[in-house]
Length: 133
Length: 128
Image (cartoon, rainbow over all chains, first blue to last red):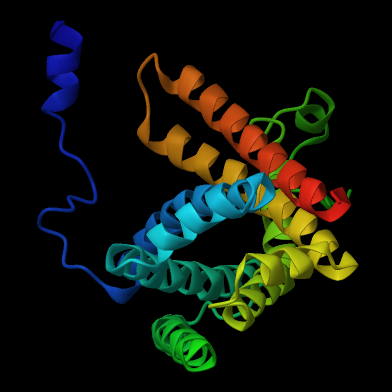
């Protein structure tokens, strides 16, 4: 179709191939990506609950997947994705309430989101591993 | 006359603006997000506490009234928030004829997963 060719040759803005990544834009897309990752993790939560309701054998099967090295790496990633989305969400609600729009505040809250999600992820796993041991 | 709204009276009367329900979508996503703050923190804390617990301990925990209630509320808020969020992502990136089927499948999927999760929790809570 000739119409689609004309559409394709149009310049696009922002041109993400040459646009320098910034904390603001990276956290913006990260909030979407971590939301999608958390959605996939939510499927895992339902699978875990259904297995628990089915019986000990089904539960043991799901637990063995979660306890494997692969399962633990996925769970660690999901924990970080969840906390990044969680902290990013609080930042969004603050913006919605009308706070933190100054450039300094935007960068301060952005770095706070990164730092707090890393700390919460590591803290969660340290506490979890200590209590299991 | 002082105008309290940015939309004109005629525009309001004939329902113009933000696809008519844009504010409702935005508001519900925020309400669910606020509800998810205590619900997800409770869930993470509970999972940390039960790491390494065997089947009977986990079932006994899910049978407590607080855990049953919090888990059902978590599933409702989580999948409502998920459906609203994924809807925006699909609307932004999917423009072909599969856009509407994708939106419908996503909505039905979120509903089915929430129902499956809630039924599993209730089966554990009310089962013998």
